[in-house]
Image 1: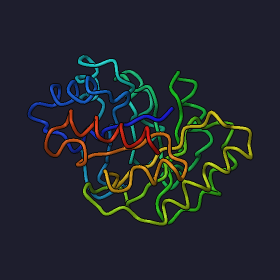
Image 2: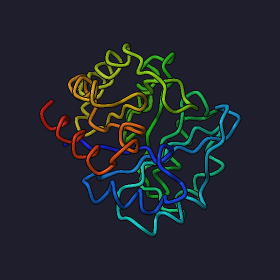
Image 3: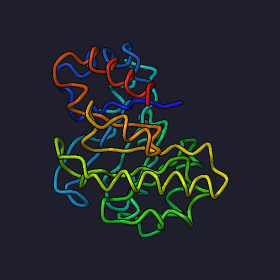
Image 4: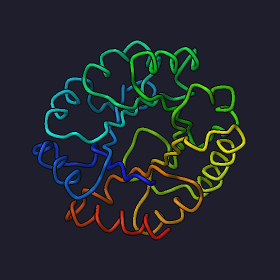
Length: 219
């Protein structure tokens, strides 16, 4: 089963609740919420209060991506705000294992994100602690970047690692530059959760969701 996780960062924040309801009703089962701290990544986005406010308008799975240095400090806040799945960056954690354990102890699924320059092999020591591997297919911190083609190889490596560790249930997410031109390739490479931002919210969001889901089903 594959899931589309529209990136809320690309939505119109003046009508954010309506945008979220539109994509959820069109068939998106997850929503990707990018939290940026202006330190680990250069931009600042939004925090737990915004997530708590939009939690009221949908039952979709909240896929919270913390692009935050030492995210363990804020995990309880995001759990309370309504996060279902929390991903942290390998590069941003002094103790990745401890952070992943804490996410699970809070009752959320745990994801470990890796930047384009970070090899998939760094995830191996944490395979018993993760519910998802998040492969960044752009450099984190900016929307609208071009998909890095070598990410397809990393998705295949992540899938192979999951299978080798007996984790066929593992979610493998790809984030960055996903659209109609490459979403099938990403699925075929091993992704089963696909983040799309401008490809969803630019134009008719409901129709865009349906088109992307159709492509995912035929991959």
